[in-house]
Each structure stands twice: as C-alpha cells, then as structure tokens.
Length: 356
Ligand SMILES: [Mn+2]
Image (cartoon, rainbow, N blue to C red; front, side, top):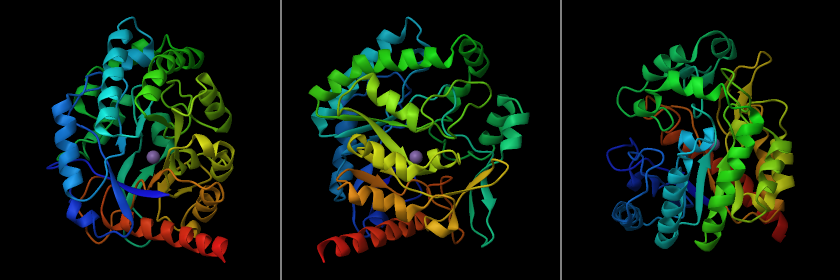
C-alpha cells in the first residue's frame, strides 16, 4: 500500500506540502489542475510545473484526481468526440510526465453531494453530512444555493460555479438519458480512451457515485458490486479500473465494501479509505476512520487489501474538521493525518502477523 494525500495546489489549499511531509509514510500527492474546465486539454507546461513543485517537496505525482469528464460525453452528444480527443491527449501527456493512475467519475451534473458541510458530531468536531429528506424534498437549484453558501473562499471540485451555471439546461438534457444510455455512453468513452491509457502506462480508475443511488431523478450507475463488475467488463483491461471509495459505497447499507474489495482486488489501483455512519433513515455523516465510530469496518477493509497483497495507492479520503481548523470541507490536515495513522496501525500489525 502506497500512501498518498490529496492536495489542491498552491494558493488553493489550507494545508502546505511541508505539513504533509510530517505525516508518517506519505509518499505521494494526489493532484489535479483544478482551474481547468472539464473537456479542456491540459497544457504540458502546466503539468510539468506542478510536477516540479510537488517533487521538490519530496513527493511523487503518480496519481491524478481528477481529470473531469465533460457532460457532453456523459450525455452522448455528438460534440463528445472533440472532448474525448482532448481527454486522450491529456492521458498521453500525463503518461509522459510519469503519472500512473487517473481517477475520474461518471456522475451526471453533480459530483459528490452533501446537505451540510459542518455538521457537529458529539465530540464537537464537524463533518460532512447528508440528510436524505432534504435531498428528497428540495429542488436541485436549492441544493446548489446551499452548497454555494459554504464555498465563499475555495471552490469545491465538482461544484465549480461555471459547471453549475447551466443547471436547468443540463437537467433538461438528462431527461432523455436513461441508465442504459449512460452505460452505453460510458462504454463508448472507455473503448476510446482505455487503449490510449494502456499505451501511456496509465490505469484509469473510476470513482463510485456519491451517494451510490439516484438523486433528483438523474441516472447513476457506479453504485454497487454488480454494476462495478459490469463496468470492469465494458473493457477488460488492467487500464480500466476502480477507485475503491469505502465512504461513497459505504453510504448505502446494501454495499459490503470489504466484499467488493475481495472480489475486484486486482482491478483497484487506487483506494479511498474512510468511514461513514449511516442512520436507519438513510442519512449519513463522515466520522473518524476508526471501525467502531462508523458503519464501515475499516479494519476489515484494510485486511481485505492486505490479504490480496495490495500494492496500489491509498489515501485517507476525507476527514472531520478538528481543533478549530479552517479548511476545505472534508480536507483538513489533522483528521486525515489521524486516519493515515489508523490505516498504518492496522496494516503494520497485519504485516507483523504475516511475517511471524
Ligand atoms: Mn472518495
């Protein structure tokens, strides 16, 4: 397991790389060019400048999260071919720069969705919260206004104002797109890009939908074990893989995340490992990584990776906001550092057992 830490770039993150260096066992920075719109071809100079800055601080740049997929690709519009060409060129350039894994998602309109970014837990820390009744009962425009109220300083990936300007048009367009259409559009995209990824030494790793079910009537397909199997079979290649996110998949009680890891271990190049507490009414809140604090058995998750000889990349994904920290929602320094130490604690004891 190669430990990494997501970082949003200079001037775009409350955490510095010098701070990340003091978290034990972190080798790589998960990065992106967050100011570029979905569908744009990434300029090589920009890629090389980011690589130089991250490497200067002693980290590798092996994992990019994300290269976003333009809505026209997900919608299957004729203009998708132009955006797919840009995507291929970006894959090639990232391969030349030494990138090994590209994380992306195929969620229509909305990326990850929450109703409260700073919901207080019993111990006084705050965390990302999803209240199902709110999402079931408000219209998507209201949700966007809610999300925007939290994002005065740093825009959140997936919720960029530009991307949400045409919300009404997008919802109209998706009325014509069924789940089967979305599957066909994903297949079209993968058949085009996976050969380029193979030739570039890159593994594509799709992130599951968050939460893993339809919201606002939009189709969603990367939601459970069966559908992940279907996705992997669309193009049967090691370069067509999964970002296994225990928090996203674990926010539905129907998913046994450790079982999903054991089933598809050889197709998981990138692991997001975090816990969520799921309530009977479907609400969920992000918690500490410790197994007993949430509904996901993180100890068993790490065990599933360990017993499969996992050599891929991992990150603690999100954390709570602790000790008055001002940070991007879910992306503070302290709780992610604590999470990493929990993951290493479990991993190292399993190693010790194995080598006894
Ligand atoms: Mn994730």
